[in-house]
Length: 142
Image (spheres, rainbow, N blue to C red):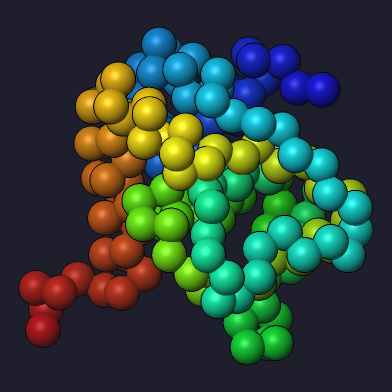
């Protein structure tokens, strides 16, 4: 079992939360649930409603879109950050390649955090916007 300090350290290494203060990281860590999966478990299924954000604390997972392998996630990688904002459908399937330990943050827990600490939401939106801009290219060049 991961300690709260270990969870905070892992969160601080994630770009989405890197701008958060120590106090904010503590608040986020308190809302995190540790989830274990066996190798072969489908953690998220393409097209199904996303319930939240997951950070890999241990193990590896394969990402597929339309049945085609796109990436392998490892410790420190994450997925589902958009689900924190809209709970929309998953854009990919994530399957545990090895035994997997995830840190999960549900959309409803995140919304509660944002209601109490608006700065967490603002920092998260800035980080998500930067990720989307990076993935799609700078629109100012169009």
